[in-house]
Length: 251
Ligand SMILES: [Zn+2]
Image (tube, rainbow, N blue to C red; front, side, top):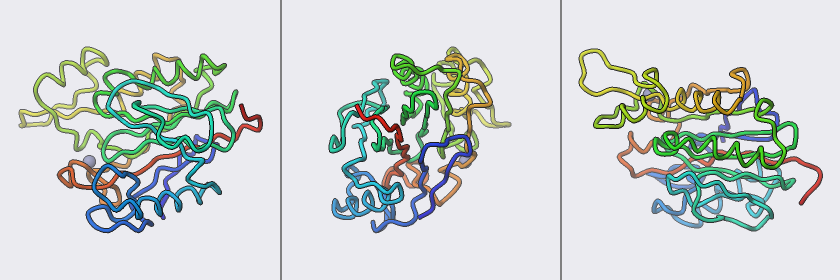
């Protein structure tokens, strides 16, 4: 297993690569999604292995049914499994792991050293444009967090080198984040978008200092260590990025 970690985040957390699981091609090997056509028994084994890295069991792991929206749900107890339709999940419950599944979309992990809350956010282009990261931070602040103290890590995702788009998307992104989010390509009609950069703008708006934001450089489409929806034409697995709440006081 090859787990990538952010130097900024002190809570147990991981951005996994696809290595170290039992799924077969095209899901080889650490696929964590049941919705892509993989063997359920292989997915269960993979979740067990990942949880074990946190000295936890799969029952402590809570995720959401991701729908490219901006809903944020709270995990409050072990055994909740998949909470419902949402694209971010946070918890204040000691021992719980929250996570999001991606294969090019941006996984964002947040910790609040002040209250011990942690959150995992799934942001594809729709979530970035809808500023889901702000919705997640709002929920943490409702429960006592101070945005200026949060630590945020943006994990492996399709980066500006590969995220080619056309149509009205560049203009929609520029309207929300400014022209800096659009990366023209010399001699080509299509442009690229920088999703991490856009999320950085949202975080600045929320009051998270730039020094508290870690943008990991890995591009899921360039780097074959990761599942990539675009590189593999949609038939691939999902990596599950996770963060664990270590609060002593359970709710
Ligand atoms: Zn790339």
